Image (cartoon, one colour):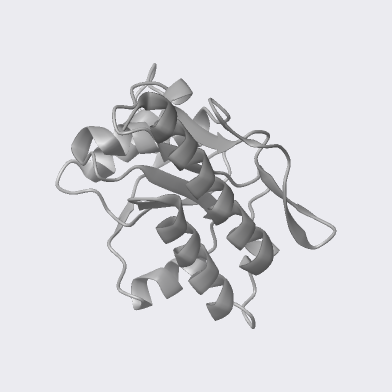
Length: 184
């Protein structure tokens, strides 16, 4: 497969996952900072090797709304999550961020996901949170989800990891179906 073919396949897969999220994701799962979903090239080294929704995914008038197009380099934050996870398991090429709540964390635990937590208050100086937090959770094995309860000026977050954007989107859609009567 050529590099052009790989990029086209990645963008097509990501676009399809975003359409699924638009149609089936509960907008209450979108954090204040917005969500994003990313898909990295097999040889990804920088955020420019990772496709994402430019401008993120937001809740607009009670609906899931991607702000921009799917493009390579469209995310730095969520791209760094997947790039760090790929250092530990190159098969994990997709990630997304969703809103954190204690009820959601309890649901994830009940559903038996492999979850890892990190504490932003323990972040060493001079290191970016996602690089440190994700790496600290991936040392033994890459979990299904990485959670934190936030810090001053940092929104708490759930990060979902998977091999491709449709598997990550399907996890978000399944969670959406489970929270209909929950306070998020």
